[in-house]
Image (cartoon, rainbow, N blue to C red; front, top):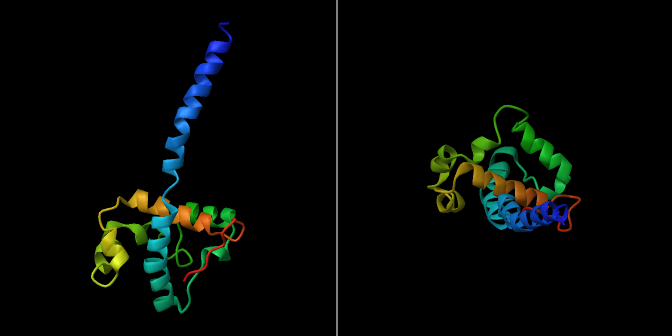
Length: 129
C-alpha cells in the first residue's frame, strides 16, 4: 500500500496543477485584440502589409518569439508590448490605451497565445481582419 500512496499524491498534484498551467499560457482573445489593433496597424502603416498569424506554423512562431528579433533583428518583439511603447502610442491607439497597465510579460504571453491559436497549422488559422 505504501507504493501506491506516492503515486496517488503525484496524480492529485498534477490534476490540481493543470488549471495553473492553462492560465500561464496567455489569453489568446486579449492577444488577438492587441495584435490586430497594435501590431497589424503598425505593419500596415510602416511595412505596407499586415502579417497574419496564419503566415507561420506554431513552431515558426515559437522560434520567432524565442529569438525576440523583430524587423530582421533591428529591434525586439518584447519592445512592442512594453509599457514604454504602449505609452508612446496610447493617444492614437485604443488597444495600447486599454492595456496600458497590463504587465509586459503577461501581454507578451497573450500575443504568443494568439499567434499560436491562429497559426497556419492550428485548428483556427487566423487572418488580420
